[in-house]
Length: 251
Image 1 (tube, one colour):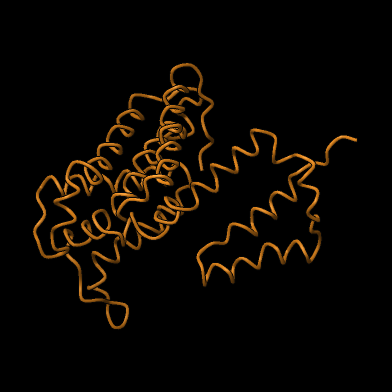
Image 2: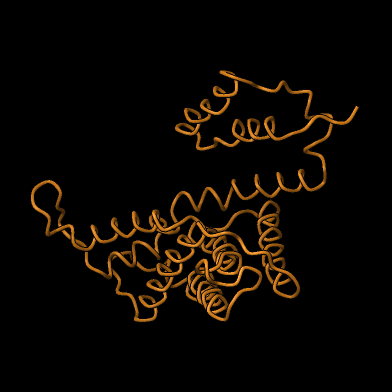
């Protein structure tokens, strides 16, 4: 994983504008209601995916205090892909029969570009190992039919794989992005608001006991069982992190 950039000036203003727009978008959904799955998830990545190319450099040799023209190209391409799916061609894409109705060349091109942008953003933010794992899975989908015995499968065409990954809610816009778009982002947003406002370090924090030893481990492990049933493991983790990072108020 590459170190995040330390931006300033108009470059930081651009990043801040996109981040504020993302926050306002998700807050507005609390009033107007959430969107349909594919549009909601594509709109979510419309804000966050382009930021990856501005906040994280392409390599260790890239500038650490400014982004490059290549970063701006990635920024624009990823934003266009999300707009294409969530706005420009959304009605046509969701009204077609998946895997049966043919895709246009533009659909295939945008979908392939969306996959490449996701790979590149993952490499910058998370690191190369996860990209390698995803690439192996992709190669298995494309060429796994050539493997012998139980390791093989019936085979998938390149068009099928591209459509599955970029134009359905089973690939890039799957359950993890859906959870991030509807729940996780708001948890993070309000958590950062509390921390920045100082409420996270107020004396009220100390009304809750600070877990230590086995108790702390239990607080961290318990949500694992909780997530298997309800999909929300944030409460216990947030409490654990807060209890370990908070400092007592001055006497």
